[in-house]
Length: 424
Image 1 (cartoon, rainbow, N blue to C red):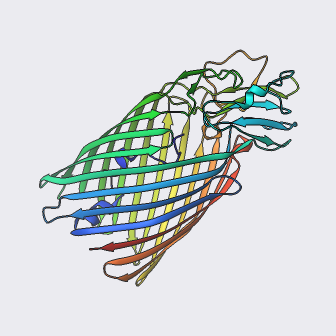
Image 2 (image 1 turned 60 degrees about the vertical axis):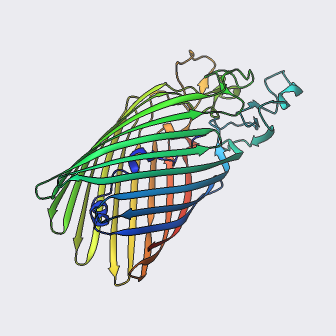
Image 3 (image 1 turned 90 degrees about the vertical axis):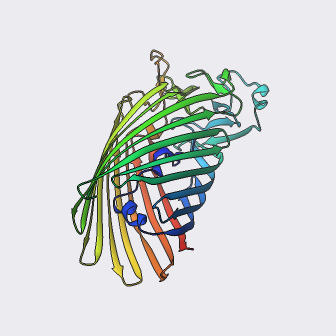
């Protein structure tokens, strides 16, 4: 499955954050930053991510940047089934598997053949009454690489081009991006336009299940699926004073192809609110997302304040708002940077907690809590020590809290990171 935090690398290397791009342009030679990020959900998924970033700016102000990352995830992940007053037994395979209540495939159908699945190793797990059904066998690895090249074309024009590649156990992504930055008003104003193209291939182990078909039927329609994503971003950055800078962005992303998570299921409940079957989810094959972003950064009293706001909406009726602020307190060779982030999201029009046997079959449906109402908060901070002109060591520790419409959405996590930066 695609790792959620694998945000699109297509445009990430092309757009600097506020003053970051301007300050780096003046640093010649090679710079490197390596680190390890540790993410641990309470009782759920744990992730370890080593990262290496390299960049070089020559005398002609041509900059090349390279990013390499590896993720390893394991733990328990919600499978989409609803909470029940009964024990629920699920069969997990490398391709999705089946589920049952009270340990049988269906009422009156106890077939040992369900324990055999040619797509991979079969395991069974249970959710106790009142528990969120969690698949404890979740595991994935990801390798990601991106490279970007930017250079001046003239005194008032800069161009950039980049490539990206990401490989997971059952997901492969390749991307291209390019863009231009126009420098105006004695370089106090920057107007940037970037485009990105991403081609994804999803190879669910055991094959792609038929959307909204029973997990017991094991109907597979394809060995692999494709998705194509087109991105555009327009960014305006303005120096507001010698100590302040602002930025506004508009982005649009259009994707077509396979958007469904082939491993997520939905409970079919009877009139007594008891599960009688489980079906695979099914999402639309088209999606258009748009967002507006505004940020402000100011140096004051020797410190730095950053604040930003982002509003996103799409044609699945999902919308979100993100508020984020950081304050960098400079203490000589040290700095401390508290951080707070608030995120609120509405649900898609096809999100359900479960389906009922008396309901008409929907065209699309998903019980994935990530498509429902969500509220998340991240609070923490970063400490950095510049122990030489060319070397710095940083530590980051944050606490993440998530609530939502679904019981599966209730989750807390700890995020920690250590990184080392140097020039050579």
